[in-house]
Image (cartoon, rainbow over all chains, first blue to last red):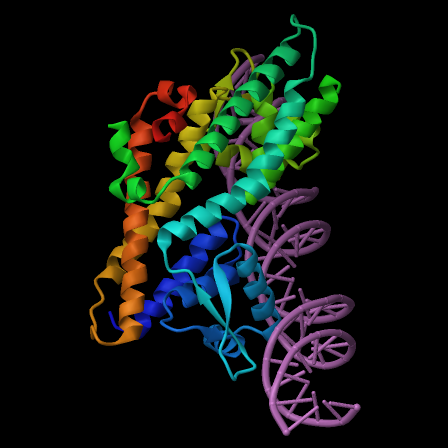
Length: 168
Length: 168
DNA sequence: TTAAACTTTCAAAACTTTTTGAAAGTTTAA
DNA sequence: TTAAACTTTCAAAAAGTTTTGAAAGTTTAA
């Protein structure tokens, strides 16, 4: 396979993966483009390379900055803004996990805590089934939350070394 | 909060979480409904309780079976089919992780392996940046894959006990 | 067999999300 | 100041996804 084709394929695959994980396709594609770009790119270049509109490019770039995945760079003497991606894969994974934890896991835990408090007749199967499921899911969610917290605070070394060894 | 309200809230939250994670809202809601139902439910009951159409209910139930999250049950002397959810939260998590690994992670690793093979001029920054990113992501993806494999084969005990303790 | 009871399918409709592009806003050099 | 260079916004359009419901298919009891 030739480099240009490989780049296209990479951008396409990253986009598809993103959309399967609830991150919009364009956002993932712009991220992919910046990941393989040796130098920072301008909005103009990104629009052109992915055939997307100015508005779309702008919004997507802002979102990516919000996720902590890319940064702006000013080049002295230039008016344009340049964008570049953090290329450290461990940072990327950490950043995404951190954001999703905050945006999704935390609100769910809040609801589950409330629902765990509901009281009822211990001889009512409706109540018992509800209570058991909610309590169990709450435990799992909190466990995942704590695990993430610990992992996000950790250094990358153990990760690259392979967590999986711990579970053998 | 009163039980009926709590049930509604649980179904709603589970649905929202599902849609944020690329599982469709109705599917997650039907799953939630079955999770808190003490006894198996018929298609008819599910349609009614969630105000969805027969076609939608049928499709969703089949999908949930495909994900290994619910099962059919025949009641002797009855024509209707009853559905119930596996209530073991660890099984649910395992099942979802297993499916997503198969459906999403595996295809990505396949593409990354191909892209890692692309050769080029070691003095070309375009090639170098591409190669470094692809190789790193490939390593991460394989690491995650192996970790999942190990976790999925493991018993639940260490999970409920808290993985995070291992990383302190 | 038959027909009632139930399940499945699928094209069209409803809904949701994403994208566009023109207009408004902002910044900067002169 | 001014105007050129650039960024941001947002309502409307396009694209994508989910849902509906009627029709077709299947199973079973008699």
